[in-house]
Image 1 (cartoon, one colour):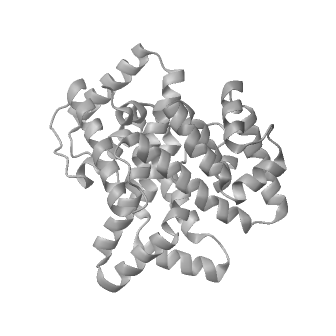
Image 2 (cartoon, rainbow, N blue to C red):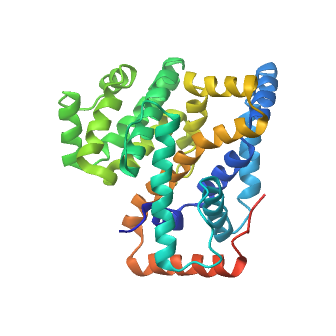
Length: 313
């Protein structure tokens, strides 16, 4: 069985990887408190700007280093032994172990999640992100709402005809319109329908659902070319949900910065694994088997020669 995490990691884009790097190392309790407060005073997104700057700095690294960084950080966090050398089978085995452990981690930190597979994890995260962002959309002005809803409508209408028909049946509508999509977003019937839809078509549709999540978060307007390049942006909304705020509040009361930051990374890690899995869906369309093998060979050679302690700071 092929690891979707490894397959996707080989095809992830620079901006996606560098964004994850910025969040992993710099979305800390101290930075959240300091920059959210100063941003509130200045009426500016100091935290978002800070994380964006860190991502831009990381993006100057070469692609193999970024991929190696992500793999090493996840392995360290999950206490997966890091071999001095990799070969294709052992790399694939590590990828599958990461998928299993990330799923188990999400089950521990999110009591609403009872899934047992990476498929369950991706589906749950995408729908939870869309639900949270649906609530956020209600707070925006009508013009912004209309622009976002129009983009969601365009994504739905670009789906293959058979998929559109299936989704219309789940929503009990004859056609997609702006008013129907607005209502479906606000009453969460869209997220409910998408959850059922993903059960029907599995990973093949997840990339399209991720586009909707990015549109709702506003990220798609920044990265039009590759809708999945910053799939971690919606996580900031997730962390500042009641569950996330409670975890951070607990950290302020009982934990040191170290343990609180580890809790934040516990939220990040399943989404980082999801990012690679989503990238694997697009890679399936764009990359042939020979190219995939070459990418893996290049990465293994880089890992084996650079050393398993390589890290980007």
